[in-house]
Every structure is written in C-alpha cells, then in structure tokens.
Image (cartoon, rainbow, N blue to C red; front, side):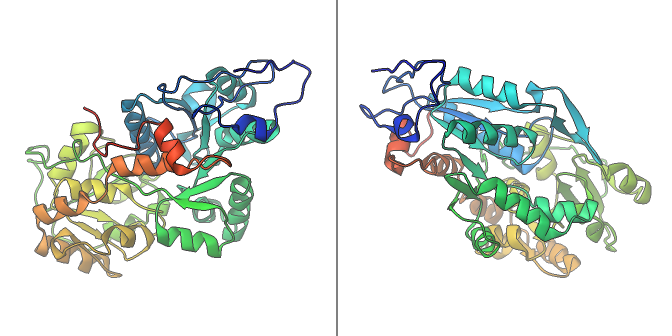
Length: 399
C-alpha cells in the first residue's frame, strides 16, 4: 500500500508517518516521493547523524561505529551522516574536530534518498543541528543521545558559563522523542538539570577486539608502564597524572590540542600517537595500569577496553569510572581522590583475569538491542522495534 503525495502538499502528518501496517514501519520520505513499505524481512534503515567521526579517537566515535557494525550483522542498514560528507573547517583550538559548513540541504537530501525508519542525532554540532532542523520542519520523530559534557568543556576552554551551556543542550534535546544516556547516575544528574524524556543506552566493549595480547610493543620502555588512551586535551586533566612522582614510564596513546604543549613540558613521557584495532589492544595489553584522570567524561569507554585487555584501571571516583567500577573486584583497579594512591593500589592488586571477567559484563550485543528498543515513536513498542531489526530472539550475535 502506498500514497501519492503531491509536490504542493504539506508534509504528511505524524499519524500518517507512524501508522503500523502489516508489522512494518513506513519509511520516511520527502513530500515529492511515494511512501514505500519495506519487506517484512528487510530489517530497519537507521540514520545516525554525527559531528564526531573518524579519524577522531574517542568514545563517541567508537560507540557509533560499533553500533553500526552490530546492526548491519543483523541485516539492518545504517547511514552515517558525518563531516566526511561535507566541506569542513577545523574547530578553533580543536583541529582534529571538523565543523561542517552549510550542511542543511545535503543532510535533507541524504535523508530523503535513504528513506529511513528511524533517525538518531548523536551530537549537537552543525550536522546534528541540520538533522534536527530537517526533522522538526517535516514533523519527523527522532531520537538523540548525550555523549559529551559540552557545557563543562566550553567553560574550561572558552569560559562560557556552565549553565549557559546546559541551557543550549536542553533546547537542543527537548523536542526529541528520547534522549539516550549512558548510565543511571548520569540520567539522575540530567533530570536534576532539567532534561526530560530520557532512556538508558549503556555502553559495551568488543571483547573479541579488545583482549589480552602477547606483545613487545613497549619492550624498549622501562616498566612498570602506566598508560592513558584518549584525546590529549585540557578537559581530561592529564597534568593531574603527569605531575605525580612515579617511578614508571608514562605512555599517552591518542592526539589532541594539548599534545605539543605536554610534549615540551614532559619530555620523558612516551607519546605513541593514535592507535586502532589490534595495535590499540596491544598498547593496553603491554601496560601495567590504565590511568584515567578525567573528571568530566560521561562514561569513559577506554576504561572498559583496558579491563578487557586484562589491565586494571586507576581513576578518580567520579561519574564515569564509578558507573564502571562500582562493583568491580579488587584486582580490577582502584578509584581514589588521590590519583597516586589509586595508581599504586591498582598496580599492587592487579589481576588480569579479574579485569577481563569484569569487562565481560559490558556487552555490545545488549547495548545495540537497547539502542533499538529506545527508538520510541508513538504507536510502536520496544518489541516492535526489536522484531523489525531482527534482534529479539537470539541473544547471540551472528557469525
């Protein structure tokens, strides 16, 4: 069944878009196109609009990339709309982050051509705003997710008052059907800040990719080796780690706007640059302790990656690490307001098997299902979305 929509007609109403027919979803379409009904066995078509994408190395990119790989294993289709699709300029003081120029028309054209079943807006930058503008003008429902403490970062770098930053974020997310957040604690915090319509989308780790590896990647460095992985930037409070008097080699894996400054100030630190795949797993595996000095991350996926490689975590007892380590065994690491105490305790008690066992609790299979179930559009329940994505019955990923 299809409907012809004249070029001069207004966009179809939400009720028309969301009508459930024969157990399938109506594909979104532009007013110039016909609605098309997917085959019942065709899986879902999902748009993910994100300003954070490769070659950035951070939890947002890892999360979205892994989500797409899992969804496509179940024969769903994922269209990423990223800065790679547009002319872009480097963000001031953050050259590795690209800001897309005038993305509105192309974003609209990409969505119209793809005709998705669901639209997810992952970031609040130019691409996210263009996708949000498109959805609101067409009255298309969409979901968002909260990944980054933009308000705190903007305050740290540009002195923008934190509450101004959160006011901008509340305005961005308020019209979505659901704002997905990584942890229950973060959800509580966001509720206190006035955010609404939230659902949990927990993070996972690819325990096949991140595993203990025998490696000599740091064989020429004096041990023990304490490693940080992630963006090298002021909001990560990396100097809290660097100023400690530790008889070790410190390794930084990643890149960022503070890299050259820290290289000059701390010449004994080994800067390995960005690493991916098996090379990244090898960096974790060759370390004695993974150190995470950030106080602002909403989760900190790198902590779970390190644990999956058999490496204990040392961090402050703040939101992200607390959510990961609250029930961790003694050998998996230590959280302490004295970062040196956390590091030395993690080193003393490290147990690779306990680290790996704790990391296995963070399943990407479950996280992908949770994402699909959160595509809450009026008229469709969680079971409908999971069944449409062919992810409701077998809890084991296809090989």
